[in-house]
Length: 421
Image (cartoon, rainbow, N blue to C red; front, side, top):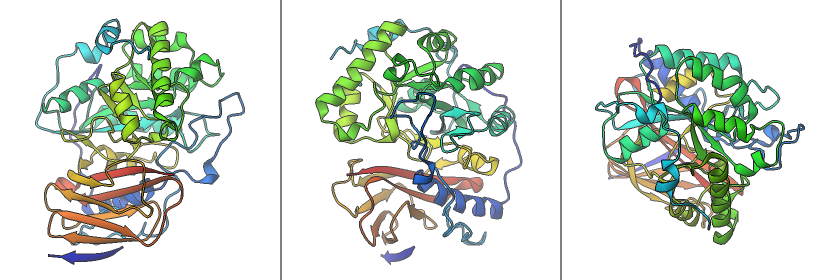
């Protein structure tokens, strides 16, 4: 890249582990940042033959094959350049009928950290869908790390509440989310989470359950999870590309799903995840108006007290990006705090995009990695960063990750996902 310089229900056991060597962290960091920038390729398009609907979240994972260019271009330790849904019930009343989960009952865990990492899974042990699946061997390794390493696993609503209220969290706080309510979540993942007392959130698109597809959970299964303390989140009615809809249709998606949650669970969720991670200003406003207090996208990075709580980041995990080096790198990441991000809307109106932001504090080693386009980065003093591309980007989704080495060999991370018309 050319550079121009111009003047939850349970808390895991906490154990300190030996930090990775700096050189190793640099190399893994570069390949991970570059890789997580790229969306699933056409080669990952999948058809669920056992009756999954057309909206099967087969391309939602934020990762794909590792990028080749730059993957081995790590700087030396001395130069730490980074890896490469109208009938919505009032939420207060609706949520009051929800079962009191263990993470809600637990006395709030406190600390000095102002950030947390949230992971996103989809399928478990479904090898025919590698772009959204995690193997059980990989999953077991993740759980082993979370329950034996220096992490505090908390329920996502608790994390959101703490950070939104400006309260401190334990260092290396982790949240776990699972999108789409595939049956493998119930059959394979939940027994493991339950055994290890790990809280998690499942985001549910209601029509996928109403349609009775064999590869999704049933409402009985979702009720069982909810009664056991698992957080249920909203994921629209039809798992649609919401920015492609007019605003009335977006509101109908939210209202219809809320009505089904009320009918089936007796409450409406408070946490939302945008299908495919896609949103724009109107969609976000509609989700907030529907009563959701926080919403997640699919851009990489650690959430923090100054995050946009209606478009929070998560790290996606799948077969291709489920290795322990990458898992550990993400789990230990810190936020790269920025402001004045442009474009401000998450749906591009200019192509190529003129991307920029202001750093909260200097990060001289920072670098940025777009999913498409050759970038030129201009540094305007120590704080303002502007990225320009050599040409327009393809329609669909465009991502960019910016990273900088932080304290204790932990990467600071800021990612964005834009929908391209």
